[in-house]
Structures are given as structure tokens and as C-alpha cells.
Image 1 (spheres, rainbow, N blue to C red):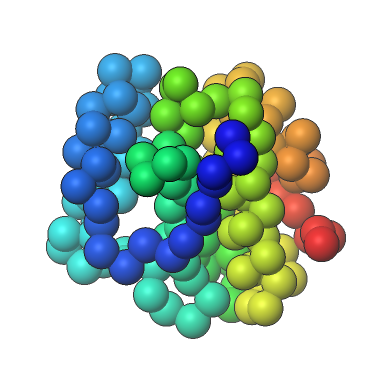
Image 2 (image 1 turned 120 degrees about the horizontal axis):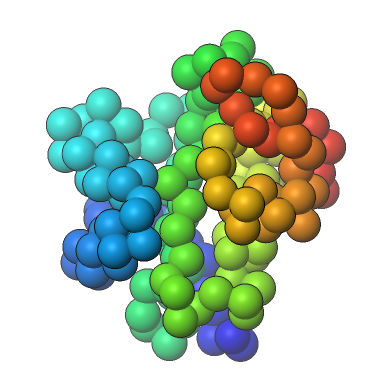
Length: 147
């Protein structure tokens, strides 16, 4: 998708409700958690090193994902979270572009970025993005070197 624009989200876009519904229909609840945490103020991705990024194609929100301090790690450990790509936008490099943008932000604040996925497709996606599987109760993958 040539018209891809990735930018920071400071106010949740109206399209987030449709994203949440799509995610729920696939059995994912992490966007519901994103909305709840945003509304109650417990996670707005606004601490040092944190960000929530959205990807838009021709003005339409097609992906969203965040980077926060890992609550299971030290101050130098980031956590990739709440990454969702609209089904129609998958397999076009949008998810990878969003992960690269999040990791570019991570470079400035974190030495390691961790995440948790419990699907085979998610695990394969993150490995393609340079993450490696880890044995941990709090993470399934991590990356310590990226550019």
C-alpha cells in the first residue's frame, strides 16, 4: 500500500470502535483492553519512551500498535502491545512497517523490546520482524538488536 502514513495517536480515532469489533470477531480482546486502559487513564502510552502509533492508508485507519515500558522488566525494557492490522490490510507489509516504526522509537529509550502472542500466525509474524522466541511467563518473544 503506497499511500501508507504512520503517525502518533494522541486521541483515539473514531475508527477504533470498528477495529475493536473486528478484533473481537477474530477472538482477540486486546483492543478492548486498549480502550479500557485509555479511558481509565491507566495506559495512554504517554510515559517516556512510550507511544501509540496508527497506520492510515488513503485516510483510513488500517493498523494500530503501541510501545510501553514493560511492566515485567526494568526501565530499559519496552513492550510491544495492542498491535492490530485490519484483516483487509494484512499481507501488504503494513504490520511490518508499523513494527519498524515502533522499534525506531524504542531505540531511543529501550535496550530490549518484548511482547506476548499466543497464536502461531502472530509468532511467525514477529519472527519475520526480527524477534526471537523466549521461554518466559510474561513474554513469548523479544528483540535486543534492531535498526
